[in-house]
Image (tube, rainbow, N blue to C red; front, side, top):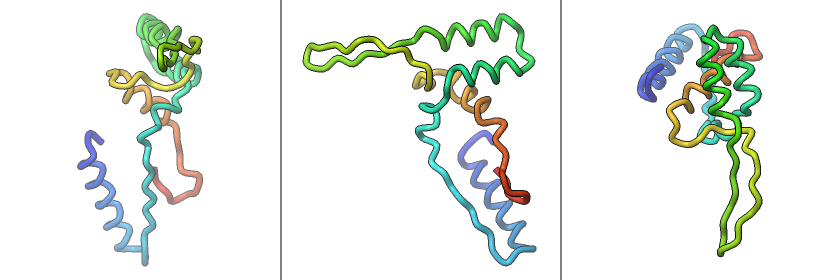
Length: 115
């Protein structure tokens, strides 16, 4: 899919086709707005390593996801730096592709269901 509209059309098409042979259809919709916060860098890099990527691309990705840290400043006080080992930097171009790679091997647990 390339857009929300395309995804809705595909869902509607699937539901209509199923209703021609089934008495009812159950559709479950999930909100993945925080999904980017759950992407663990180590897991993502492991999945990138399984893809047929040139070494220099994999090395660039590994370098991109390592050595990021975060601190909070409030009323002129700063917390200590903590390493970031999960999440995708908001607004980054690699974010959507990284999440697709992370979630790409998800499969339905019940035969006949689709993801």
